[in-house]
Image 1 (cartoon, rainbow, N blue to C red):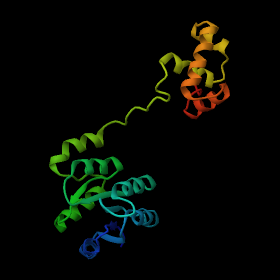
Image 2 (image 1 turned 120 degrees about the vertical axis):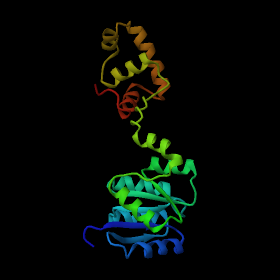
Image 3 (image 1 turned 60 degrees about the vertical axis):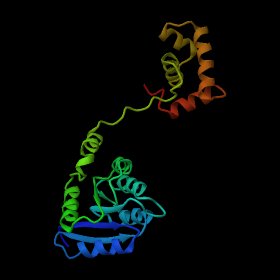
Image 4 (image 1 turned 45 degrees about the vertical axis):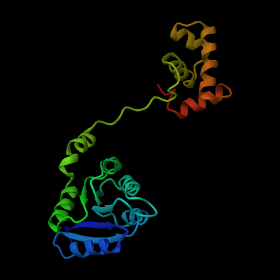
Length: 216
């Protein structure tokens, strides 16, 4: 069906799954391309069929709808996920949004609501109830969290020294660049080695570089 929104339905209850498929299939502008009975099958079919929208039940066997949503969105960012749920459990819905869902509908929603929700998320919009609108909007629009600094138990000075060690600097070069005595640097390097769990300097350098240090 050219130009239709391609929909994959994932729900472990055959009555709901088949009923929704029957409800949507005759409608102009919507094409049901597949159905899945569990989260793992939903992920596999989404990768194979590349639907525009996945209607995803939250509670399913093998792989739950939250993790399935995360995997679908990671594999195909253009695929939108619309979560179907029995109730407005805040923790579950926030988890779904964090996983990449673009909204939710309660099971039992009217046909017009379902179609409108599918069209909305396909167009890049979001769909959720008024009770959670403020929190979900803030979550969706929030800037990404700042990256966590590696080796958080190191002091600022120790982190600076480790970065220079990872860059291949000798103790003498580090002492000169940071205006420290060679003995101070040597002692700090020993402390850092213990904190990062390295047995020697080469091992410490490997661990630091794996964490992204030594590149400046």
